[in-house]
Length: 323
Image (cartoon, rainbow, N blue to C red; front, side, top):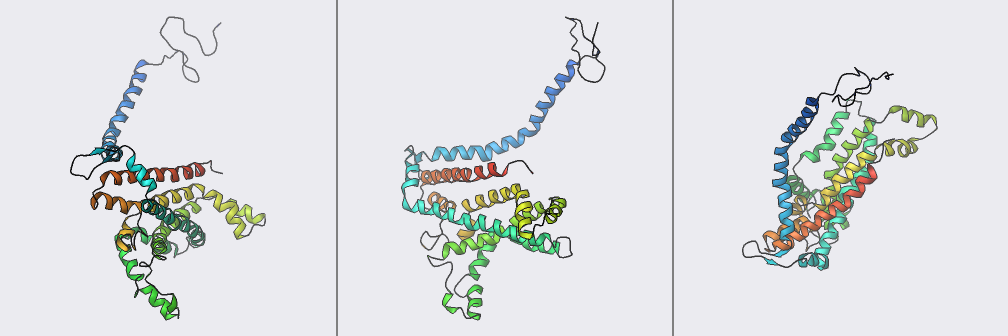
């Protein structure tokens, strides 16, 4: 007796189908061939992008790693030195100071904008439905539209000895606190960090406001029914629901801090001394001013590894399942 699904005699070359449909209908070989062909067609569509990515990203990356193993001035013959350039990066006090500067900027470029962004986004969320919501979001996002070169020039004027910041302090009787914010050793790096905070705050706020708009309102209603106030509501509902958005903000801003160049180059050129010099600026100087292409390449590889080491843990912590 045959089953309800039917069975095919051995050696007939017909494969029975499971599930619904006609049990006696065979799986046509041309469907399998079409599936394989479709996959190859898909790869053909992606191939131009892969070629461009390999030529303009992977190839320069491989060449950078190669150059880092040589001592080369960019013109004459290169001499193999192995890992000597990397040893210099990790033992030279100036280079270590420059790498430390980048990690200090992470506080201003990343952590402060995210914390302030959470506060501002919580306030903005309450007025996004009103007529001023669009205007507020536009004003907050303006720093992302303005070129960083223009932002660096504008802030250099404002933070100069006779700039707007010092004029405002003199107007309220704080003459003793006025100074050349970008020209003194103790204030130059924090001043550059303030510029970075201003640039990144708008991006973080907009991302967090967007994330808050996706939170189910019933969660807030349930929290209020349980007697939760605004602060408890924020920590119990808003913050856990924004885990992935916060991860995106931290990833983008940490990369911006470690790879910063424009703002530093325009506002301080790395001075005074090397107080505001960052790896991106030092790589430029080593390669094009001092003709130490090998050392510049080694510092670039180290910078890339630092970015990966900082970003991967954040991605793993914020990739968890949504509540």
